[in-house]
Image (cartoon, helix red, strand yellow):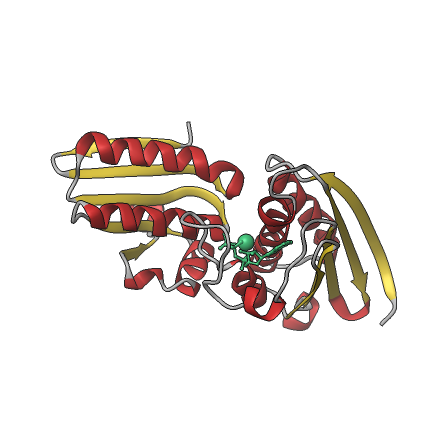
Length: 111
Length: 146
Ligand SMILES: Nc1ncnc2c1ncn2[C@@H]1O[C@H](COP(=O)(O)OP(=O)(O)OP(=O)(O)O)[C@@H](O)[C@H]1O
Ligand SMILES: [Mg+2]
């Protein structure tokens, strides 16, 4: 499974796992969209903590979900982006579409 | 500049090969002792070019993707990714950020990613004949850093 979904009230969180490229994007997209349709959230959180690689297919995935969320007037947050993922997202100007939290390392969080 | 080493491979344009292609190129380049950031940059650029062959060049067929990596003197890496697919009518326009012919789920940022992660990107293409993307990057020399 490349996506783990967690629902908490009106918030759906999708924990993405593995490599995000054109080959894997479709399955992730289908799982996220199914969760949106099922739960009609007001906020979708995409968690990138366990994404080990991402190219522009990841940008397509985020932009596509952003458009879908707009139709139900829901917001999009992106969390736990590694420096590499943040660099790709920044290039695409995704920070204009969604709030992006850069990754906090687990050991820093524990302090 | 003198070539020190090179590597060639040909793979069918199956999406399951995207991961293999970028990892293979990264493994070959690793002999130059690149930083993690440099390796990730190269992997990402290769992923973009290979994906374009699969998604655009050979849209409704499976064709061959030709990948060549050349290591030159002074830590210079040249990656060439070639297809014999549909070709690009207007290369300049295709390389503009956000330009895509593939609809909703593509951002049109593949070339922008290649350009930002590599030092130089050159694209030659002929409609009906195919496309060649040549990317170069000079890696930092770690012994200089010390
Ligand atoms: N190898 C190729 N053969 C034929 N057409 C190509 C090739 N590479 C790119 N193109 C054309 O150039 C356009 C732009 O490519 P680019 O990689 O920048 O964006 P994209 O592939 O459409 O979207 P993204 O890469 O963000 O998922 C493509 O939509 C396609 O029309
Ligand atoms: Mg592309």
